[in-house]
Image (cartoon, rainbow, N blue to C red):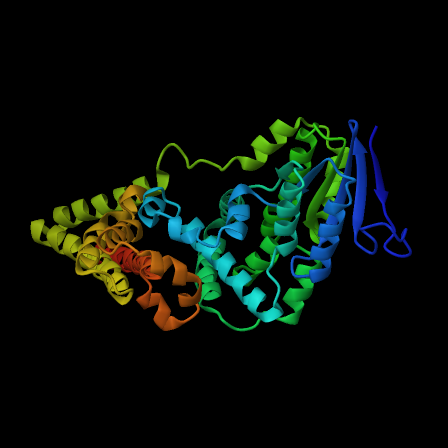
Length: 409
């Protein structure tokens, strides 16, 4: 038996701690779920959450957080504990940059509105733990959401979003009134993603709708409490209530589906096509004009890709050995993803100029100024990664077109 109730937002019982707040109540499988919609930038939401947790009505508290986001809210030194070399080695540079953009955006909101974004979620966790209540983290991990969103956007959408991440981290202007209103009615990740990617059905599906299903499945897994208070952004309230009441699939199956990241094709088609084009071009040049023509084509390819990749690294203020690594890796980048020039040069940079504790602590402030990007070692590694990759990409197109022109001519 499943029921959904919408508690009125006007003239509630005086003793009700959720008076005037957007609330849905779902009863299912012997558990009563009270879903409280909050604004991530509202002091009133913080007060409502604290009052609700303190009311003694609930056996467990669930929050729209994953373990990583909770840690970032409660541990100000989290960035300083990160191993940037391991981040690069694991291929998570893009995810790290996206999380940094989110942190920068939240910092701008906090300074502008004098309230910590997500303070109501932090208060729910802290107050619940103080009272000895179980805390359930029901949101999907941010990195998974980001990777699934990137896969749905396609090549051009990913490129535009990547460029927008850099713009978002550089920006220090005030957050507009429209965005603040969206935050009051919506979701922090949705507002943050809109900073560096135009609205699209793919983004909405991944950032909002999928997480509604995911959080509903996580709540259905928790059957060890009779009355659960779930604190979520107001934008999730309708979808979460609907999925919580209506979904029939096993929660584990839903979560597995929404945590899956599409693996790349087992056969590297793109690398094979580019490799065949290059090797075929060199062979054609040798057949048509001898070893001198083939060597000239090879030299032009190496210079076009290597010099532009190295130039990107140099503009980022890379160490001389990082620049050399970019030059060597760039001609090979199209042949195998493990040889990506941006990853190679950033790894060398991080190894030779390992960031200090002070670099991590100053990171959020430094990325808001142009000078800070080159002063801060963590920011410079990210800049190295992006600019080397950009230089190599331009070099690949330039070198490929020049080779094609030579062959056709």
